[in-house]
Image (cartoon, rainbow over the protein chains, first blue to last red):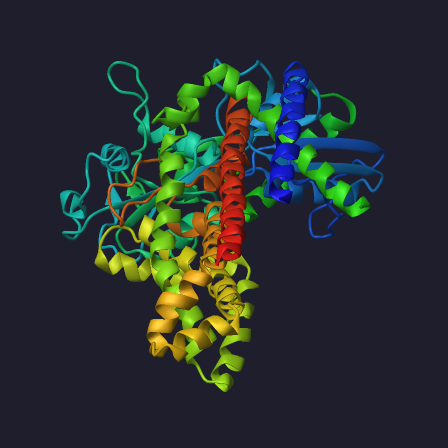
Length: 300
Length: 274
């Protein structure tokens, strides 16, 4: 039968594979490869910065929260400097930090504070981003304390009546591990217990791998609660006030809203030349205006 | 010949790539810890795949329990019971169903099945929702292959049975189905293959929580879902652990294919003995 032949063939292939495996295990060094490269076509919408003598290429990769903003800023910068090409890539904060430190990109993007575990890099504060605690509009609860939010996400509070709502089970939804939004939420809201151990988001929480999917969950389920970047929140969901402070850009800017994270550009050294021109532009008034338009919080 | 060797080379390249990326995780985490660890928390350096392995198995078994009886019943209807005109309408419909992209199944699941299950209890993002969606996805495969194999049973079997005074149903149940069993078995195994490999629709309806599902209404995560949900932000050991997930998945598929081969083999010799 041919099947016996196939099995023989298969076992010899398997044997070859074992050998190849052994050879390859030695060389598994894996460079950071950011995903989804996008080269931005120049747009004409933004105010034109005065510099125009520059030419060359700038590469940026990292946080996907920063990505849409960086694309807008890069587009405006390229309109003003037609000889400059700025390439924006995603990959996540972890990739941004690693790539900037390795020197594989000119600028890395991070959507959280750098910790002592991260390499020391030059930080350029680009903007701030609030994280809203969101529920379905049908939910009568309008605000929670930070402690209540922590207890809900840790799974200690499981019924809405315990926080002044209906007698219904709370459905917690969160982003997946590694997401910058989740990491920031973890740091800013969940924090650590008395022994210094991180308080984790309940394992029973529904996990979704994008901001859009989180919005979908909240829109569809009157008992659900989750968190999402200010930039994504719209009127189809309700953002809760935290400690009686409404989740608004103004409150985030004046520092009263407690769940705000920084968005950074990271460079290995002090930026110079073309890179400096771009980062300077990003901190200029006209760039900060774009930042406000995009739903993020200007740092000026 | 060239095409055949090309597909073989591609397969080889994929296997080598997955192993190369995944093996550091096996050596760093340990194969036992990886396969039987019950905690998956990359930020805390815990990489246990057991909840996902269980998740994949539960969802696959659940969808098969729903799809196999229904699929075989539909195949009997199409092959033996339905009038020719009904068959001519139903058969293309079933075949069309195979071609619908999985994300569409996921979308329907998310917007129709999940809210329905939420009425029963829990968040709706659950093992049950995943089973129902998967059932709809593997049903057409099972129906069309079972239908083909029932119709491929030599006509003399049926005629002989009827001539001996058996009713139509007795003939179907005691002659046609046993004679077609290798084809039906192959249909089921192909269904299992699709169920284990399904990713997008699963992510959309299963809730992706890394826990052992304790009821049909509990969320869970599958092996494929684990890779797709987390690869975007993964780096270092985390990324390697996701490739290790792919290695486990590959092992599943190889085992499955071996079983398929055996079923075919037994089927052929079985028919030969008759």
